[in-house]
Amino acid sequence: MRVQTLTLAVAGVALLAPTTLPAHSNEPVRYEGSVQASDLLARVRDCAPVSNGHYRSDAGAEADIPVCGTGDAVFWKADLDIDCDGRPGPMCNGNTDPYFADSTAFQQSDGRYLSPERLPFIVVPMASAIWNYRDDGIRGGSVAAVIYKDRVQYAVVGDTGPYDIIGEASYATAAALGINPDPHGGGAASGVTYIVFKNSRVSPIESHAAAVETGERLARQFVGQTAEDAGGAAGD
View 1 (cartoon, rainbow, N blue to C red):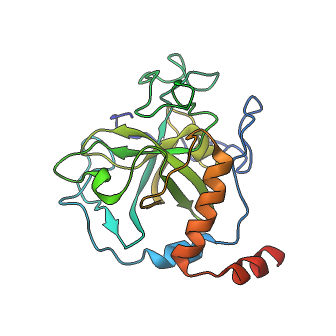
View 2 (cartoon, one colour):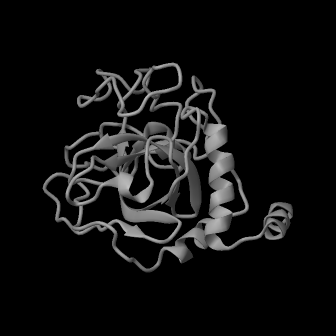
């Protein structure tokens, strides 16, 4: 998790294609499911805060982001800073990211740290007096829906960050959402919604396919969509 202020890439920088990761990745990254971004956003219009205070989007920014909750999920609306921490690769390493750390708060089933280039995951703030994610049934491997514009990407909770900052996801998450994933200047300044489903967990944590399957099922429940609705949407 980085604590520097997000510096946006210049407007003319081309984004990576939204449906693919770099060629070295063999992970599926985007799922065209039955639950649309608009369906999910309609469920999180109103905020019932579960945090005891507000978070900052970046170091030095105003603390104005609450964590909100429903019976099934917690959510927040923030920016997206790029988390390149974890197992190093061609795009995430000490040369490409001056804030790089070769570890994540949670580990794969084989004991290795998560790969930010291959695995879509999000970062939650470390437990504090502002909010303790564990109190809402969130843990490593919990499933999240990350929404940007009209795109939905399912991910897992894979790392923790500073106690007072929120709004960060892995290189792979950003790339799948069509956000510039460059750890030095990429990200999105605003407009990203994070929905984490309570008491959900993918095992093994590194299985993105399992996160997609679980995320789609929980998202359908979250928006009140039946199996018949899902079948009809998939066939449209």
